[in-house]
Image 1 (tube, rainbow, N blue to C red):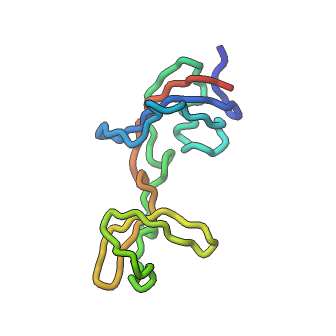
Image 2 (tube, rainbow, N blue to C red; image 1 turned 60 degrees about the horizontal axis):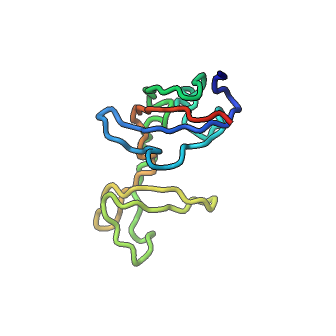
Length: 142
């Protein structure tokens, strides 16, 4: 039986957990996740974990933050004047917004603080700085 290698299209079932055991994502009750191994479609640690697996194999992979979504970057936490926000927006802590970049792309941000004239937003990935645990089952090598 062949092993999954870079360039293969693979299908996996997975459950992603934090160190405290809380689940942040899972393919349970969904179709398996399909991706090209080593093509940069997945976090580096996930690609590395699937490489070498055979169809039917299961494993638990502990992926450090530097092979997942990276470390938190404090420069991605910024204060924005409320005057720059749409007039009808009433920001609340924890609210997710899409901020327009100069290049026209929008990025997801989370409101972390609301002051009288400003809000603080965090553009870090929600899983940045976190070590992740994935239970992975290789379902198919296409």
